[in-house]
Image 1: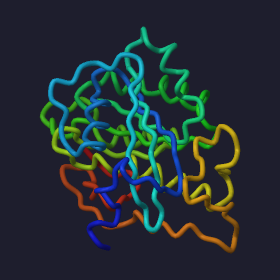
Image 2 (image 1 turned 90 degrees about the vertical axis):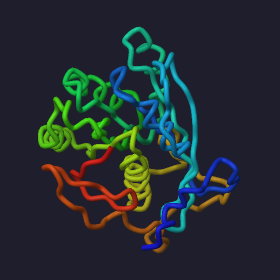
Image 3 (image 1 turned 180 degrees about the vertical axis):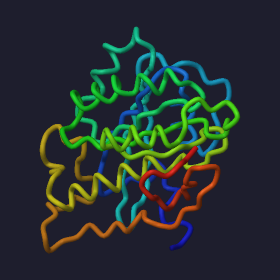
Image 4 (image 1 turned 120 degrees about the vertical axis):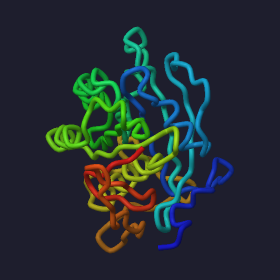
Amino acid sequence: MPSNYYDSDATELVETYDFLMKYIVIGEAGTGKSCLLHHFTHNSFKDHSQHTIGVEFSSRTVRLGEKRIKLQLWDTAGQERFRSVTRSYYRGAAGAILVYDITNRESFINLSRWLADARTLASPNLVVVLVGNKSDREDDREVEWAEASRWAAENDVHFLEASSLTGENVEAPFLMAARAILLAIESGTLDPEKAGSGVSYGDRALRRVNSSSRLSFGSLSGSARRKGGAVKLKVKNWIPGSKCC
């Protein structure tokens, strides 16, 4: 598989895309949500990051196989006083990046509340990826990979660990969610033309996918290696239950 398979150089300057997908980035304050998103959109660590006030917006266009996908990214505040504001942005989201801090157990304990809100308010076909952030701080770990992996399996969400500081696996959750959404479109369980789906056809005006027309977006599957009791995930490859930044 070529190294540029996911077209990491694609930016908002690219005017054409096949699908537009709405994502929300949620989780407790201080988990590194904004840093994770900044590294994904700017390919660099965000120094001196402050708590998000309300909601911040960004976007990035990526490629999965032959398909260009524009991701509409809503970074929500994790502080309780902004909850009533941020929850209004959950509506119509196709994907949710649910973030906790592996060095802060409380941020992990509160995941159920965030997941419940997202599933109540977002698209009925919401795809959720759980991200254990700050994997570079192994010595300060308070949440073991195995425990988080079990929680993800019990709650039917994808899971990986990542580091917004080093950039390891930062792209993986966003691409993982996009692939799952494309699979749902291909299978017919998600209709981009339906209001509230969180997905819409892009500038190329794709027609409704049917049994004779496949999306052809490739595969995220691939090999992974074990290290320190967790699976290290390559950015362009994904295996369920793997670890990222």
